[in-house]
Image 1 (tube, one colour):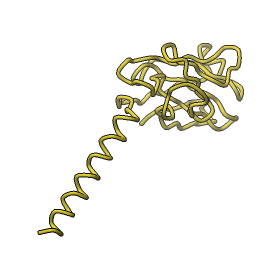
Image 2: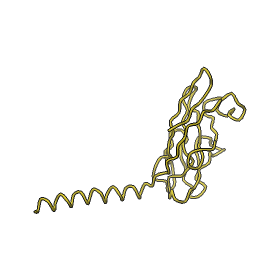
Image 3: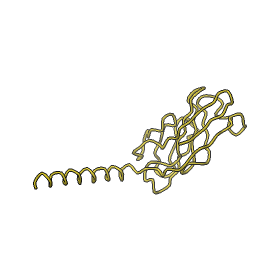
Image 4: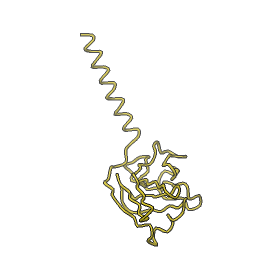
Length: 143
């Protein structure tokens, strides 16, 4: 009987701790994304060189795309990870061009890897997968 009570207590503690962690690090809503960008088009000119970035529609609150080098891109949802239910959007900082700022809580994120640099945000930005075809100059963003 005591062993059974100990098992139930352990399972209950595990469930409660997982629930507390999930509430503390709220998750950005999962939205289906499958977009192909033709980087030769004028609207994507900022992505022609490493360090370039743009916003596009899609995802939960839009997507930030950053070109790390000639072959590698990263794409993050613009939905801030602090108080996710407030639906706050991040925007690329035009002065630094390597950070993004939340319009609500003033959290700052690296657009190189999506990590929070300062502010209240507890987690990295939601990241989408990318696939680049250098021959056709097409970038696919998907989950």
